[in-house]
Length: 125
Image (cartoon, rainbow, N blue to C red):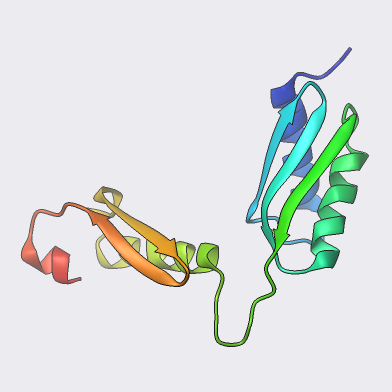
């Protein structure tokens, strides 16, 4: 019996999560008729090929398109997804009652906050 695309996607994500040497946080998986596409970012070429190998190991995968982008972090620059996660955590920490109305958008290291809050102190926070 052939797996559905959603089952295949779930299994590939699970396989990526279980790969001990791979940080799969910023890897997106999509499937179509047994073909898996990996998109997003990894920190090394080794991670890129580890992700591909993990996807190939999943039963039902008939092809893998590895469109992962390697972003080697420099000492002075953090990847946007890391900054976005930290910004979201900080907003939730400082504004636990209204954090859901605020979105942090990160592009090239710059953080822009979008949304609405009720009080001026929330805006300053």
